[in-house]
Image 1 (cartoon, helix red, strand yellow):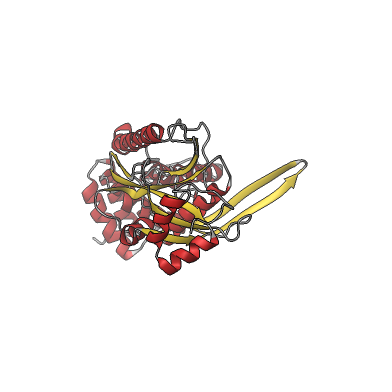
Image 2 (cartoon, helix red, strand yellow; image 1 turned 60 degrees about the horizontal axis):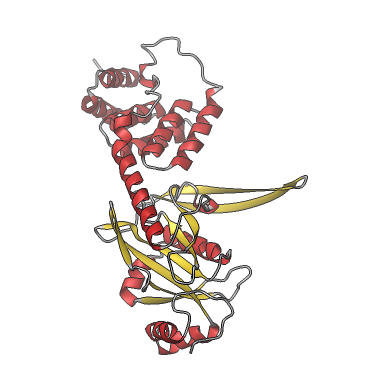
Amino acid sequence: MTRTIDDILLAAATLYEKSEHDKALAELNSLIVQEATAAAYHLRSRCFRALKDNKNALNDLNLSLEMEPNNPQAYRERAQLHFLSKRPDLALLDNQLAEKYSQFEEPEEDEDENVAVQQFAGAVDPEEITEADELFNRVYDAREQFFEDHFGVMPSDVLKLNNMMGVWPGGCLVQIAADVLPEDPSITATFGLTNPDMPATVRSEDVVHEERTEGDKVLRSTSMRLVAREPVDVPTGVAGYGYEILVMTPEQYDWPTLFLSWFVTNEINHDAAWLRRVIQEEALLLKCPLRDYPRLKLVLTKAMAPLPDAFLLPNGKASLLVATSITEGEYAFGVKHGVLNLVDAMRENGPGQMSIIFRPSCV
């Protein structure tokens, strides 16, 4: 007897409920070839999830929600997958969408007929998140200890990049009063390019920053479109993108945070591959026009003494990069005579790796 689409879906759902996930997956694969439906993709996502294939589980939930964008349970399950992949911003967004659409949910009248869309377990299985969570926490703690050992006490406040929300969810910028270093400089650094969930699997596009005034308050918001992408290739054995980067200044300024925002965006969204280029060329000249510093130029190298040039984390090796502001004359010298000669001159005659805007040229 020929089975209908509903017969196959119900058979797959029954197999799923019996924890016969491979058999349920086979049924759903044949069903989707005949007729791809939101319910089929949703149930196949659950099978993939049960088989620990979260990547395909997420792909199928995306397909299901494209076909049925008002399904709150699908948003709940996708939020759980985002949480497992250390993307709390996306998880929060999906939970908000689930809440939005849940007001339109109708109670199920027939449990047998609706077995394919029964609610998934509400909470994430603690055993499912242990490994990823523990690794993330160990990397975080080790990096924090490294920063405190070589710079100074970590600040209580960090700076999240609005245009990287959902793309770099576990990352931020920090500004540290580096009393461990000579002359007590200020360190502005990335904190999270070495996270275990990096390189990123999505990029942000069509980023729009809005600002409006309500009474005496200025309200700012950022909207964007997140697009799935294949992670960039990085060398084996490195942590995340393989580096963190800092700017060292005599005191705390805002411009290093603006520069690092530009730098991180180019790395994650535009595949700048800064570390690979530094390894190949040893030093790079950068132009980064900022609002208050439209002619800002810098040289990018690995860290030099008294800073360490690398450190180890539980997920691999990380280099420490430093960007140093340079004058127009130094930039021209680097172009003409080579960046490495400029770096040598800065170490011998100038500021070393300290960024001092509007200083005299050292060449």
